[in-house]
Image (tube, rainbow, N blue to C red; front, side, top):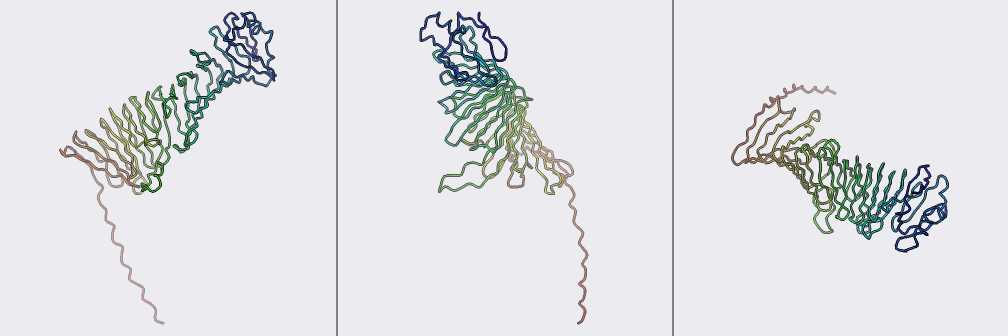
Length: 414
């Protein structure tokens, strides 16, 4: 056994009988030490002499960090790498930096951690990277519409380069910047996040507790039509906030699927005055193709819905609360709409016109439609079998007393 000193004063115990380095160049303060590869078939005594310290490079001066290159893998650390019995290379930080490309997705990955370990996978050199402690990551992807940047923090990470898969665990926070799709960065918070880089766009798999899982983003307006095509009327977009779920899968520009007893989605209008909330056990959303705007979202099983909008006098709020087995949010260029197939229960509140909320229900044949056009909400029910029932008490209509007529003042004679 041999002890290798680190700049932090700690020791790394290694077994020279099983040491195995890939082809690499270690640079310390302008000096280079070329580490031998097993493929070169050097005599065992010569390899032992190399690792025993006889040709060991001098440690970097205080304040400088060692830089190493292992194929397309760049490493910056505070000390010498240690080799464990499996042939893995390990760096102990803090702030071990590793950079490497993913050519298939035109991405560059940059990660930092307090403890980093790289391993061979089959014929691939350094195909597996394990990170522990204070993990920070940044993935920059070059796309036709600009840069897509995924960055954040986690407790641990496993990067499988051969499978083009990343797994982050331990209080994951992520931020996705895409100027072509989002107004400001989209944010993700979850217990564990798996990123499939072979998918286009990237596929995100989330898993965690309902209290911690959270997705929030503000879409940009849908792209303008091609030259010569008739432009649709503008439809303002607001922030989309999804929370309370346990697990699910997300691909911006395609679809989102989430599940959990308290899965909740809120759609806010740009003025933040009108909001739509749908809650259920299963959430399925469809994005406008290749965009970040949800054109349809459906919640199923034990559904609760809640709508809020200011009243005409701006002093109170109109509300709509109800339950149903299923409800859908639909957005089009004409406006926003909620569709609730029966059976359902609903309560409409309007303090300006009602003494108390209007309470009603609809059977299997009934469908409730709530639409928002410009500044107003309209309610409509289709029911061919006439199963709907409503009860309300309107406020009495108060006529204004006529103002007294004031006779004109006669003009004075000149």
